[in-house]
Structure formats: C-alpha cells, structure tokens
Image 1 (cartoon, rainbow, N blue to C red):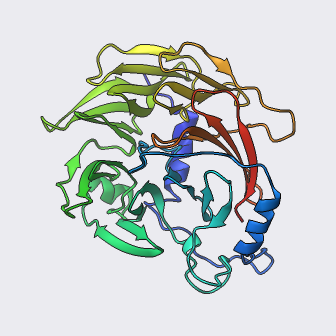
Image 2 (image 1 turned 120 degrees about the horizontal axis):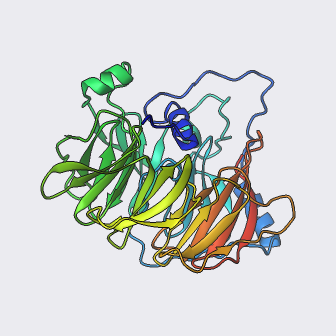
Length: 381
C-alpha cells in the first residue's frame, strides 16, 4: 500500500529548506521595501501603561522549556518571563504584560535587514530552547548558547552520513532540532541524534536512527521517539541502544507523564493516539486532531484539520471536550496555528500569524484547562 503525503509533510519540507539545513537568502531586498524602524522601548512602555489589556501569564519552578522537538513548535520557546519567537524577526514577548521587542541587545540598532551590521534579531538560527541560565539554539551545524546578549558556540558538528551527503551535499553537517532533559541536550541531525552535556560539555556518540529525515523527537525516562518523512514512529531504547518501529503513517509525537501521544493518519485524516511508554496498548483518543496539538499535565488543546476555525480543549483521556468560542471581531483563529505551552507556565498560548508584511500576530492566552482566554494583538516588526 502506497503511503500518502499529508499536508504537514509538505509544510515541513518547505520549512526545512529555510532553517538549519540550508542557509537563508541573505541578498539585499529592493530599495522599495520598507525598513523596520528603530524601536523606542521607552515609548513602547508608555503605550503599555496606557493599555490595561495584558495576558497575565505567570510561571513557577522553571529550569528549562520542556517542549519536544516538532515542526509546529520549532520556532518558539518559553522561559519564566518571555515567549521567544524565532521566525522572520527574532522577538521576545513578556508573558505577563504582552510587551514585545526585537531580541537584540545592540544599542541603537534599527533592527533593519537592509541596514549594514549584525542585528541579532535577524541572525540565522532555529529550534530555540529556553533555560534559567540562557537560551540555546541552532545555526546550521552549530549549537549556540546566548546569555546576557552574548553568543557562545558550544559545538560545531562535523558528522554526516552518506544519506546527508546525498541529501545536502553542501551542508551535510546541519543540525535540525533539539530538546533538553535535565543536563542533556538531545540534538537531532537529519538521520541521527547525539547529546551535549550542559554541565560538562561532553559530546555523546552519534547514533544513526534511519535513512530518512527526522522531523520530530520526544523523550521519556527510558526512551527517545522519532518521526521521519517515511511516516514511521521509531523508538530508541536508551539502555539497550536499540531502535524499533512502533507504528506507521505517523505525523507528530510527544510524551507526557511517561505516556506517548502521536498523530496517526488514517484515510488522510489525523487521529490522535496514546500508548504506553514502550509503545504498547495504543488507544485512539481524538478524531480529526491536527499535528499542532499541545499537551498540559491535565488537558489537550487541539485544532481541527477539517475545519481550522475550530479549536478544542479536552482532558488527557479525550473526555470532557469543549469547543472554544471566539469573539466575532475578525481576529478569530484561522489557518494553521501555533499552540504552545511549558510545564512552568500556567497558560497555553495560541498564536495566529499574519502573513502580511506587517508581521502582526494575535496571541490568545488560556489558563491551563480552561476554554476562556485573553487576547492581545502584537506587532513584531
């Protein structure tokens, strides 16, 4: 039976060509393009004080963003104070107030891609993960650590298999994604993974997983799990150093409380399944659940694939489903959304991206487990 290629795979392959595995187009745009103006932070603060609408997101016991690596979360990370967005312009949004500013520490920088200089908000990077000590992210084949505005290159990857050489002949050493669990950073190449110890700086051996592109990775205490472009769900046993296939036609994977959650495509419709950590006892949870679903410790937030205007919240076992009702003000979510959270914050954030040149986003903040929300329209240009 021939496997179909669902929409998320097309999105991923298009995204991959723009992120860590290929350099961005650094050509200078035409003179008719509108430059990004200098950001007056004092003026922004004054406007904020006049605006009583805030998101009210709070955090506690933060050490590191607990997110898995996936195509829908790769551009965002959350710490105890900020949401960081690494898209066309790197920015950070204060979680409680909603205040937004470019993620650049250069005094007087206009944050303009047309202006000579090295604006930090326009540097090529991907897959950020926030921690208490700073921000980790990738740039092509490098792992970078940023603290107090200073970048440090922690490692430069020189490993690549014949698969990478054929796939990316000019950039075979790229790193595509990562996740952090305690002291270890798990780094995902196109077909392999390896680790970096944040405390000791030790780099682990490269472990080949498959001969296709890995675009999703999550972890429990005993296993790593991967999704690839062959639509396979693969499990790596950390103790036995062995790989096995758990399921097929799989789109996205994450873990919560030592249980596994993943999308399985059936007749071109995404179905959310759960299973035990070893892959056993798979259970169907949600019909028509797109790959951007988000887990908290008690609930699942998800978007309909058939009708992307519909967003739902339910318990982790799929019960108590509520459809979220949005106000009819022209800003209701539509299209493919980013749904993100972290163990340390008390809200789930849904981000609607505006594809216009103004780069306006709408952020909806939901207290975890609730269908009620606060909304803030932000301009990150």
